[in-house]
Image: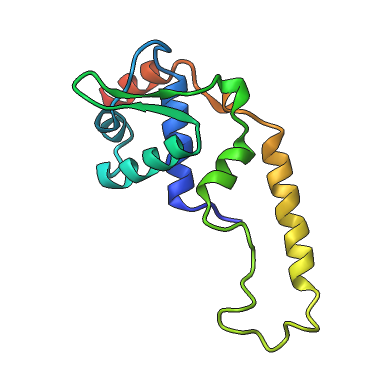
Length: 142
């Protein structure tokens, strides 16, 4: 399975937030600039992360975003479930597949998808965070 860019950016935002000062807030603009991604697209990702409860968003002059939970409490599988529009590996309805009634492929693919998500559930944001991200980023920009 290939994850959408939306989910990819969600992971990038979460990794970025986990590597910054826990008390401070980051702006979407700051993250977009650091990661060299579209501000408009990243804003949509951040909104969805907020709705899913992974981040806290604060509006206003001194607003920004930060993690809503600790890195140990955010499983990678939960992020994928929240960000992906569907985890259905095959759409047998659009266009309608004439083999749908006799095909045995979809149950196999569904089982594989469940295994994929189960594996992601074994890992947390802490497992993929780069605590020295800001130092690495600063080095790359020089």
